[in-house]
Length: 177
Image 1 (cartoon, rainbow, N blue to C red):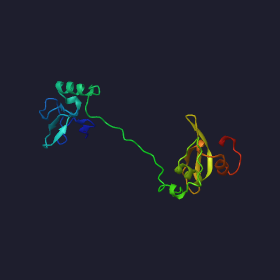
Image 2 (tube, helix red, strand yellow; image 1 turned 60 degrees about the vertical axis):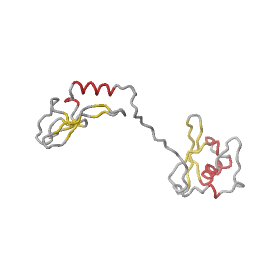
Image 3 (cartoon, rainbow, N blue to C red; image 1 turned 45 degrees about the vertical axis):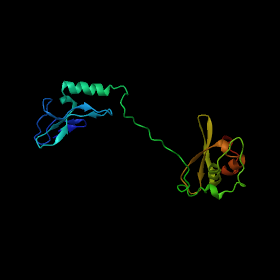
Image 4 (cartoon, rainbow, N blue to C red; image 1 turned 90 degrees about the horizontal axis):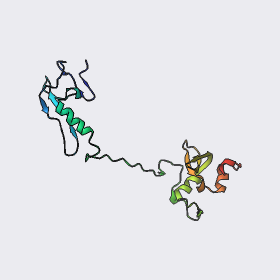
């Protein structure tokens, strides 16, 4: 037999008798200075404390709960969103050479694109282009490395025309250029 729901108990878990709003409170309903709501609790037949459902709140407890819920963001407790960071971890991608493995003599920077060494290393290790995708008016080349099931979205502006010919298998693919 069910004695509670997600907000609290509505029956005594031992005797299965209905709880009521007239039961004496062992934990008094309140709101802390930090803005946390303290749920009212009663003692049941086995001596344990349980939270009661809203249905059994007194009128004063219901009013306090309504005030708590309509606090309009004045609570001092705030939740912060966790920041996700992205980095090309070469340990996760063994086919991508370390940026330190490439000498600066091998890399030619285009002043218009200013690609990073990691981006150029990724482009160099990829062996084919799967297609292109345009997102927010930026064209991305979808590249893959030999023996990998990963697809890398690389801005088309970072890839030289010679690299595009290599990635396309020396075929002229109009959408890639």
